[in-house]
Image (cartoon, rainbow, N blue to C red; front, side, top):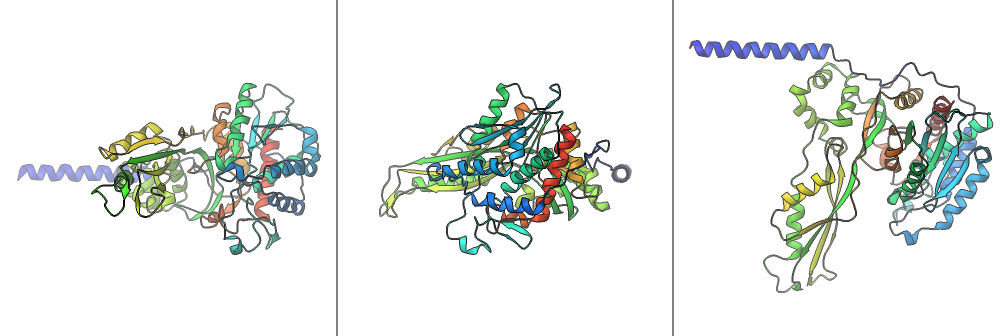
Length: 491
């Protein structure tokens, strides 16, 4: 009995200590939730004509700079026409900045700064758009390449991804040039032409700048926004992408004798392939509370209720609960592990023929703490001795480095962004898709992915979807943001 009493006393003491630690950490939980350096003083923004900007975006959408999966289907002349239109529409920029075309149709503009010792800044937005799914044109409120201005918005493919940002940048630069702005710090405007199918243009631009010894203070591109119903707080948050996941597509191949479907063996190539797919998909990467996703949760939790703060402040005790909560939705889970998505299958060309070769493609988005080597090893372990071979469709793209949330570049971007959503927390974010900016990690101290448009999570579904549009209010926010960021960073 004495031993039991001692055990009970020790257990009770342990619980009291644990409770005290949890309570203390909760009460003192105070992460740098705003991530804003208050010492940054923003430059005044020159005036601009929003009506003209909206009309210009509508015209930009009418150029069908569509990146098709089959490059032979692209209308190359559309890019040439678009470039000429940019020159005619924004003459002040083209007077102040040197323009080069690289890698086919990627654009590189350079505004030389007066102080060559200062690191330049790089701003990005791509020219191309994805196709409109055949047969869905009738589902659009306004034709997808009309650039229609209606309902206080500009409608059409690319309005958000990414001509809204591109025209926002051109409008900002034009306003600055007309207002007599003279940069101390050099400025580059880079616009890739094929971001939607791989980003070779942006890669060519980055290689060119690397050859010239450019090392930028920061690069900023698309990738995140001001989310009006952010997780944890269900309110507005300025979510700045500090990293993006890697990308890899695994090919599974199952060989078999083939033959007539009327006399199938017990195992066919298709059956073996199916088993391999199920095995790989059934062995997912575990959710891990780390990286930008964890920093996002901590920052948002500072605005949450006591229970939310308690969980964020005491991950040693509540990490499993947090992971179960964030893992309930695909978008939430994607922030905390490498995802596995079987996407394409190919087998027999005819229903009554057993294929000699059956293949499947599995797409991975690789978390910052994993590599493509981890992916291949896990897939091979999952399939074991199944008669399939595994190889990459093309060389994988590893995850990007994670950019700083304490650097000068972050402070400049976060402070400028805060003017477009006063009072909202500024938080780091992991971009689960890909951007052209990944090519600029080697020539930039930091790379960020953000444009200050306001969206709910549901509204982001229109990107690459039906009825893509951007409100004139969001367009105005973007122009103001770019003007202040450029003038403050380079002025």
